[in-house]
Amino acid sequence: MLGNPNENKSNFGMIATGSEFIFIKLVKGGTPKYGTSKVFSMCNPGNDLYDVLKILKKLIQIASV
Image 1 (tube, rainbow, N blue to C red):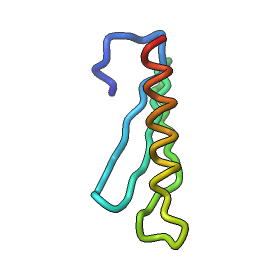
Image 2 (tube, rainbow, N blue to C red; image 1 turned 30 degrees about the vertical axis):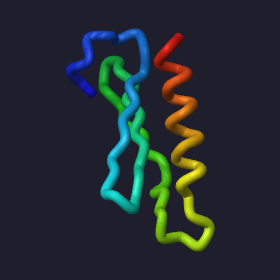
Image 3 (cartoon, one colour; image 1 turned 180 degrees about the vertical axis):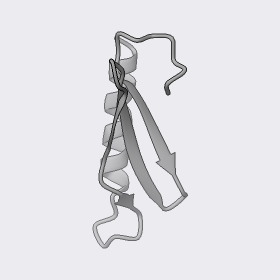
Protein backbone atom coordinates (compact mmCIF):
# COMPACT_ATOMS: atom_id res chain seq x y z
CA MET A 1 0.00 0.00 0.00
CA LEU A 2 2.89 2.35 0.73
CA GLY A 3 4.33 1.61 -2.71
CA ASN A 4 1.27 2.92 -4.56
CA PRO A 5 2.46 5.93 -6.61
CA ASN A 6 -0.92 7.74 -6.39
CA GLU A 7 -0.47 9.83 -3.24
CA ASN A 8 -3.62 11.91 -3.75
CA LYS A 9 -6.05 9.13 -2.85
CA SER A 10 -6.43 6.90 0.16
CA ASN A 11 -5.47 3.28 -0.37
CA PHE A 12 -7.69 0.41 0.65
CA GLY A 13 -6.91 -3.24 1.25
CA MET A 14 -8.46 -6.38 2.62
CA ILE A 15 -7.03 -9.23 4.66
CA ALA A 16 -8.97 -12.48 4.32
CA THR A 17 -8.41 -15.78 6.08
CA GLY A 18 -11.27 -17.60 4.40
CA SER A 19 -13.78 -17.15 7.19
CA GLU A 20 -12.73 -13.71 8.48
CA PHE A 21 -12.17 -10.38 6.74
CA ILE A 22 -10.58 -7.09 7.86
CA PHE A 23 -10.50 -3.94 5.73
CA ILE A 24 -7.53 -1.57 5.87
CA LYS A 25 -7.26 2.08 4.86
CA LEU A 26 -3.95 3.92 4.42
CA VAL A 27 -3.84 7.71 4.40
CA LYS A 28 -0.50 9.00 3.18
CA GLY A 29 0.97 12.21 4.45
CA GLY A 30 3.93 13.20 6.59
CA THR A 31 3.45 10.04 8.60
CA PRO A 32 1.39 7.27 6.97
CA LYS A 33 -1.63 6.29 9.06
CA TYR A 34 -3.47 2.99 8.90
CA GLY A 35 -7.03 2.34 9.98
CA THR A 36 -8.68 -1.04 10.28
CA SER A 37 -12.27 -2.16 10.34
CA LYS A 38 -13.85 -4.58 12.74
CA VAL A 39 -13.39 -8.28 12.02
CA PHE A 40 -16.16 -9.59 9.78
CA SER A 41 -16.68 -13.30 10.39
CA MET A 42 -18.64 -15.94 8.55
CA CYS A 43 -18.90 -17.87 11.84
CA ASN A 44 -21.05 -15.20 13.53
CA PRO A 45 -24.73 -16.07 13.92
CA GLY A 46 -25.62 -13.11 11.67
CA ASN A 47 -23.09 -14.13 8.99
CA ASP A 48 -21.25 -10.93 7.97
CA LEU A 49 -20.89 -11.98 4.33
CA TYR A 50 -23.48 -9.46 3.12
CA ASP A 51 -21.66 -6.65 4.94
CA VAL A 52 -18.37 -7.70 3.34
CA LEU A 53 -19.98 -7.72 -0.11
CA LYS A 54 -21.48 -4.25 0.47
CA ILE A 55 -18.06 -2.87 1.43
CA LEU A 56 -16.40 -4.46 -1.61
CA LYS A 57 -19.09 -2.98 -3.87
CA LYS A 58 -18.49 0.48 -2.37
CA LEU A 59 -14.73 0.17 -2.82
CA ILE A 60 -15.22 -0.77 -6.47
CA GLN A 61 -17.38 2.32 -6.95
CA ILE A 62 -14.72 4.52 -5.33
CA ALA A 63 -11.96 3.01 -7.48
CA SER A 64 -13.85 3.63 -10.71
CA VAL A 65 -14.19 7.39 -10.06
